[in-house]
Image (cartoon, rainbow, N blue to C red; front, top):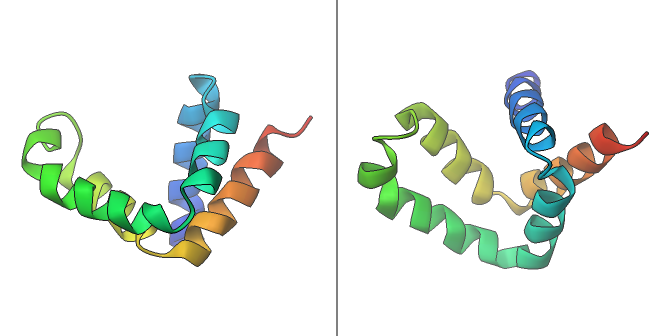
Length: 84
């Protein structure tokens, strides 16, 4: 969880900086089991996305999206981080 926490801190900080924290949490929540499909899209687009994003970041994102319990935990984390 410590490794996840470091990644989540980075993701949450960036999302909140861009004003996308709540939107991302809502999108992940609405996507539900479709996040696994999203992981497959990340894998497929990795050669294209790899020009803009580090390969390790893409692997972390895809791995994260394949684990519904992790997605749910991150949604809670994002909402807690955004709470006043």
